[in-house]
Length: 311
Picture 1 (cartoon, rainbow, N blue to C red):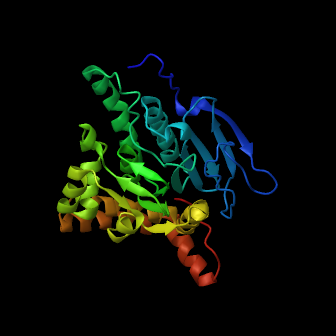
Picture 2: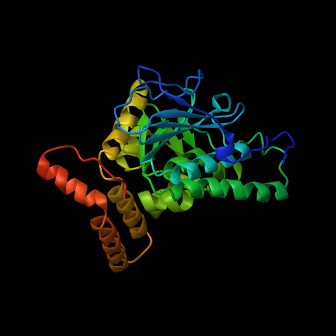
């Protein structure tokens, strides 16, 4: 591994400050042009969490929503070993946060969400270096895929290679107009091994997945929308508001019910139908026994907004 790679500390020890929002209810990560997510409407604690100087991933808390942002716009947010380690730590922190009901994965700049692995870092990799790099890369993708909360990718510009695999690892995707996605690894002698062969196949079927991976073909947002790979296409200037709007709508639902629904849907992808039905029934039993179920029905009958207990 290159000796210049920064040492990555644990996520919680890297948190530099927890600051209240200003009177306007707005805050910003920095001045780099990253998605500010400036407006808030959701009840719950609102504060800003920042990493120490020199880090490549930021985490912000906006009510019940957590916003994780790739902060390497000068490299089009390429994934280095350091980025992989920090992103995994951030996702683990969100997963363990009982006050976090939804996570948004975004990126700084206006050129690219993420162009995949940092090939400059890999320019002089030995075979041993590739194997050493494999563990943090796999841990990063695993941390996103296994998040108990819903995850939303907010993408623009280019989402290619490992960048597109980050997107595929999320539950929902909002894309800016003009975005291009694809898995071009085969064109540089590599394999989309951040879950790409498995996740893309589950979303578009084996034949289309083979075409896209064998050729490295890029898709524009219209084609991606037709294939069901993304849920919404919006103007770039509306990307932050549209992504937050989707997160807001999810936060309005019971977090217990949403987490159990996500677990049941994900389980359905790899098991026979009847086994999936049993998994769904197990989730139902946990939801119906929750305080949120009682609150939801009480609020409906009282014609008021529910105050979710998250238990």
